[in-house]
Image 1 (tube, rainbow, N blue to C red):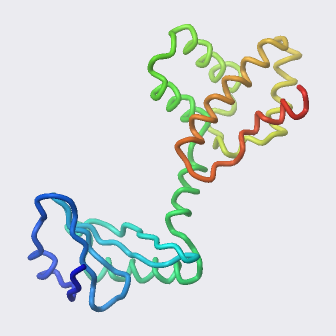
Image 2 (image 1 turned 180 degrees about the vertical axis):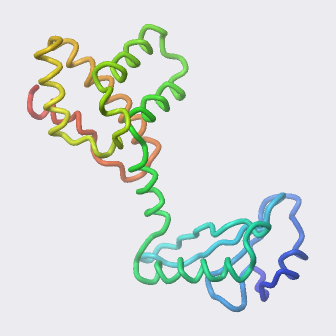
Amino acid sequence: MPTLRFTKRTIDALPYPGKGQVLYRDEMLRGFGLRAGAQSKVYFAEGQVQNRTRRVTIGRADVIGVDAARKRALGVLSDMATGVDPNAEKRRVAQESVTVGQAFDRFFATRTTIADNTRDRYQRTVDLYLKDWRRTPVTSISRQMILTRHQRIGKANGEVTANSVMRHFRSVYNVTAAAHDEFPANPVNILTQARA
């Protein structure tokens, strides 16, 4: 991997490879690098977190200046040195930001082959029985919330409806969890454990 002193002139002069990527290292800051692809040049920081190599994207070279990118990389590398995995933090934030409504929308987007009547039942679940959860982060739905909602729907609309709503939520949660690492266990599992 070539090492050179990063300046605006040297970055601009680096060629775009025809295929794949070429990584370059900065002479001034260990762990700071640039990835040149076929159409872009992107700064990154690379370091060790708990004996594992982690690479974090800083930004595109045509958007961020060299000095600003080096300063950001120094902050990222400093976090890594204290054991913080910036990529894990990004994943955590992404997981916590997915709402119940978005989870249902993503479910519909990935399950394009489900029958129209099945889709309508899932849509009815989120629009009618889980309406107040639509803007709630899916990872903040607790086991206790599931138990309470299941009991409430069961009393008002019958056990069959309550079970169907929870089956739908479980499926949507599983699809959402499959797209994210370290997602909490599905809270609907409490119904099996509680024999509800």
